[in-house]
Image (cartoon, rainbow, N blue to C red; front, top):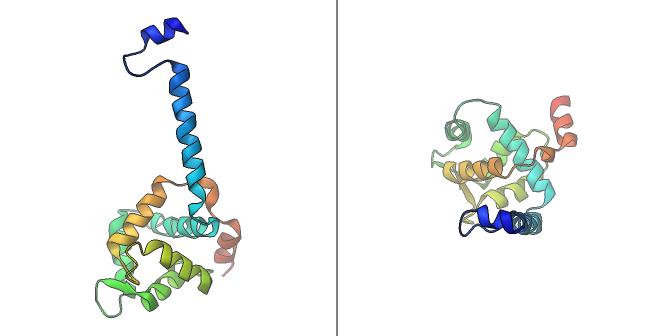
Length: 145
């Protein structure tokens, strides 16, 4: 106890105090995690897998892919274009899942999705990813197509 506290740099506390801080941070993270429904997390991870599977730069892949669905050339995907894009990327996705995913990605609630919004969404998903979260049920449907 006292020996450890004396040898740790000033302001960092003992090992026990440091571990307690980590435990509290983990508890905070765990308690805030359920704000995103599990089905959204699974869809987000499937979408991320789709873009990761393309190889190369995520932003470039998102821009290239979305430009195929941007029918009016506005640089944004309107709701109908989003539906087409998500159906094209995730062939087993259901209409209610599409609506939920669009609402989750559309942070500014503009009813359109930009390359920046989708890229930021996927990068955040990559950072917070739990490798257990890809839905096996949806993945099997996708393969069985």
